Image (cartoon, rainbow over all chains, first blue to last red):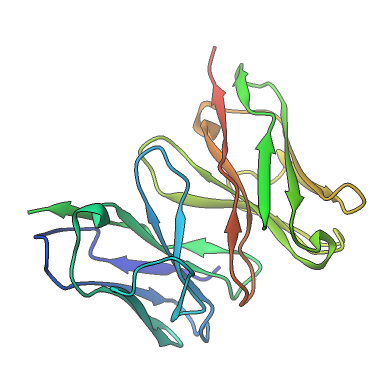
Length: 107
Length: 117
């Protein structure tokens, strides 16, 4: 199975901060990488697919980059509604795997 | 508009069985592989099982292998998972999802399974 290592597991940040979350795959997955935001009691919300394609309706402060094994989700200016847990997911293998999540909390 | 609507969740005793369904609409269901993903209370996302577009190939996480069976009926645009020998650790929200390959992923809203006596 492809292991997805997401870091950091949690972070504290202030409104307006630039936030970066990384995801590393245990082998090359090309650009088969999705990013989700999840709030308590809700289904995951798609932010980025195919490593860097912004989902329709998602604010442009979210961006994704990377290919191969190393990927990044960046929030350019953190907003109050962005405090949530973020997950990466590889869609390269039929055995889909997720990162462990990054909880973004208010500093 | 793509929609995935799960049903069949509920309370079941340890050792019991449950079948979840997922009704798909808004896309050509028979052209896409599908998955079940779960999230236990306070935990992260866990892929449970996947099935090819034709249904000819199925895949399982080690945690459910031998107990869960995924299937699909392309004539009814419906995905299923039969869950047997349920354990307390199977308690979770179960999501139907189209999350394989390079295309835009889609998720349902989830159905809750609680395994408890």
